[in-house]
Length: 168
Image (cartoon, rainbow, N blue to C red):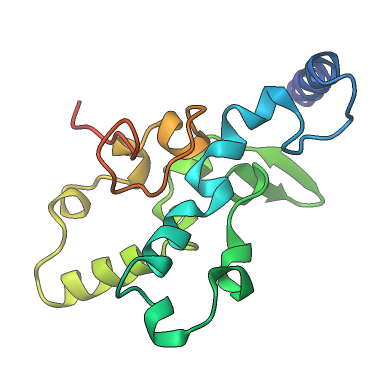
């Protein structure tokens, strides 16, 4: 019971902090300066990487002739912490850091990587990182996932405009 009480206090403290930092708004939208400088600029929130590669010369838009803004697939990008951190426990939801260390958390959206791993394994040519037991979060740190305050066109751009996955 103490653990749940402590979690409730953390959530209440975060909400109070949010309201203090964003008194003109009771939301976490782009108008809120405490979030817009980080997560709302991240690739997970904006989907800019998908847009970039779709609209790139010879990208999928050259085949479909459908503007990116008219695509349904762009709506799956993560707009809250729940997609990667929420764990259902009976009727209660809990915040989980452990869930982010599960490859399936990432691969539910990153289906191209999932297919790459599947076919690599079938061809006995599995990615060296996956073959070594790594998970996405071993190389893609918090700044890559939650943002660092800078808008990025795609994860594959050289740092500082792309992600900064490293072998440390």
